[in-house]
Length: 126
Image (cartoon, rainbow, N blue to C red; front, side):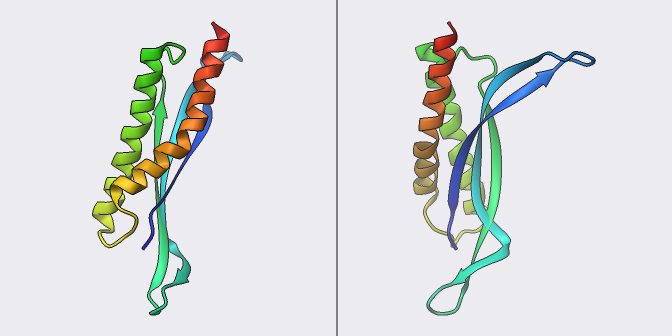
């Protein structure tokens, strides 16, 4: 079984009731993937390879991601969420690959480009 983790950046819009104004709060969605319902292939010995998925949303709420300390905390939140998601899938599917640490590193590495873009955008607003 394989573990795939992908992270996508998204804007979350919070609107007050009855108001048309919306405020954007940067969020990163960490998705670890191993879809159970869909066979994606078979091993050379005929064992089905399946993917399942698990997603965590990571918000920058309460952080000034334009500051060095806020950016570090946001990056830590993303990294921690990737590790938690990979550990959860590792518990549910102990014979899966890659390892939890490899899974989390790949997810975090992939996310950092998007995270840095969000941090740069926040810095440009100052």
